[in-house]
Image: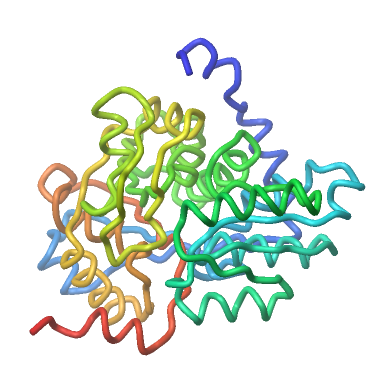
Length: 332
C-alpha cells in the first residue's frame, strides 16, 4: 500500500471517536496503572515513569473484542444472522465468541489442537462451536470451507479497516487517560493492535514515539519492515503463542510501517522474567504476549527510553494457573 493510498484509507480522529461510541456499550474502558515501586526505580531509574493500560480486564480477557465487534457491527442483518467464523490460538477466538453472543448470533471458531485447553473451554463457555485442527494453515483452510458451506462471515484476527478502527480505540482511550506520554510500546502479532493503536496515538499525540515488540521466534513484522513488504514465516517458535502470526498482511503492515519507530525483539526468557515481574509487582498473571511490552522496556529499549514517560499495554491474558506457573518457574 502506497503512502497516498494509505492516507486516503486511514480513518480520521472523528471516525475513531465514532467507533469508540459504537462499541462503547459492549466493551470496558480499561484502567491505567502507574507502576511506582522501589523495584521499578532499581530497574529503570526513578526518572522513568511507567504507565500500563490494562486490557487484561477487557471482556474476553484481551483487547480483541474491540476489532471483532467493529467488523461484526458492519455486517448486514442477514449476514450477521448466518453467524461468523474465525481462526485463532485463543484470544481472538474468545473475542469472536463474546462478540457473537453480544450481538445475538453464533460463532464457529477454528483452533489448533495445541491451543491451551483453558482457552478452548472459554470459547465453548461463551457459546461458540470449536473445531480443532492440527496446524495454523489447516485452520485457515477449514475456516474457508466453513465460509463457503455455511455462509458464515470470516472475522480476520488482525487485518482490515474495521479491525483497525476497533484497536484504534485502545490508543484513543490511552491518550485521553494519560495525555502526555512520550513513548508507547505495543506487542505485535499480525499487527492489528500495533497498527490501530499507533495510528490513533499519532493523531492524538504526534510527538509520542511508538514501538512494537515481537518474540525472536515469531518476528514476522520485524522481517517485513526490514524487507519493505509483508513477509511469511515457515514456522513459529515462541512461548508467546498469541503473537504467533505466520504472515503479515498489507493494511496492518502499512500502518505499522507508517507509525512505528521500529519493532524490537525479545527472547522467551525475557518474556518469562517480565511475567514474573508483573506477577510480583502488579499482581497480574500475564500470558507471555501480555508481558512483551515490559520485556522490551527492560531489554532492548531500556537505555533509549530512560527518563521518559512510557506507556505499556497489558494486551490480554487468557492462561490457566498450571501453564502460568510452569512458564515463570526458573528454568533448570
